[in-house]
Image (cartoon, rainbow, N blue to C red):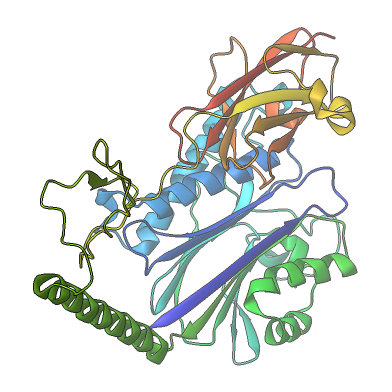
Amino acid sequence: MLKRSSSAYSAIGNRDENQDAYWCGESISSREELGFVVADGMGGGRDGRWAAQTATRIIADALHTQPASAATQSAAERLRLAIARANADIHAHATHTGQPDELKGGQVGCALAAGVLNQNTLTIAHVGDVRVYLWRRGRLQALTRDHSWTVAAGEEADWGGAMRHVLLRAVGPEPQVEPDVCEHPIEPGDVVVACTDGVWSALPAAQMEWLIARTPPKSLARRLVEAAHERDAGDNATALVIALRKEDLSTRYLGVAAVVVALLIALIVLIGARANNLLGSPGLPPAHSGASQFAPSSDGFVQGSAPDGAAATTPPAPELRLNAPLPQPTATLAVVPVATVCSEKDFNYSQERCAYAMSEFTRQQAIYVSWDPPSAQLRLVETMRRGYTARPRTMLPEQTRGYIRLDASAFGGLRPNTSYIVRLHFVGLASPAEIRFKVVR
């Protein structure tokens, strides 16, 4: 049985925004299945970041939730269907909703690679120039072939010139897209690396092999991105790493044996205590013959009060029950966090200036939305213009504690005399927090 460890890292480089997105997680229905996505927004479109995040969210939902209808589908079929849904959603949003005129015609899109890793097989589907590599016994092998002008023309992928990054296939620009799908057997010791062109265009294969061989899996993704930006920081760079090793079954069996021994000791102590109660203990007062005034509470502790006129005594210890259900953890959040909105200048100066409700701003390059308590984990962000009938834009937020920065592109541009709405969806809560603001000039 293979044991997996994964890491991912993304950096903006010398760009105005990071248009990369990624996800890695297990399927709800099968912990033996691990899915991943890495997407790179098309730099020529203003909504490249939105396209990458939308595609990542749709594919992640499909691989993570895996509905009952997917039980009979192969990993390749599920990947094809998920990419088709992402392509349809991005294309429809770019061509038929209220996008700026220069975006109409389907010029919004992204390149991506997605995969499903089972116990012995890696299934990959990719569109564009996000690459997936397999490192095995010191050698690095590319598992994908770029859908780019240079590769189609028969040139090497590192060939320079204006056509170097022109994609022949991407998710979003066309009504339909056909991903390349392949399967590869995996072995203990293998390392799978998915990365955007900000990584592979800057790092030669020999340097990637050297880094993979000498870096622990948990820090490998960050090291690859940092090494790429040390050579060329001109683009966003994202890497996702999955390392495979054979599970040490002896450790598992030792853990099981320890649990069995602990249960046997507890059983022996319980039997001895009951025998002692039945035979009686010299020097101890007789047990109270009436009904006990103490009852176990919901948190497992014993609580209560002594009878009237009697001194309080130490309550009896609760009985040890084998196979008793474990207490369920309580939710960390009981109510929707309170959200505030703030201009970038005020947020950097003092968060106390941020407003809880409707706020008016002059035209801003970005706003900050914060929430209390800051420990609430943000799952999804929706943005929209107030009174606008189109579907809201959705994005996967960068992991920050208590706040998120939203630039103008998150709203399709911030227009004067226009009101906007931001909805924050938090993990474990059904209702979102909503905040509104208006650009007055």
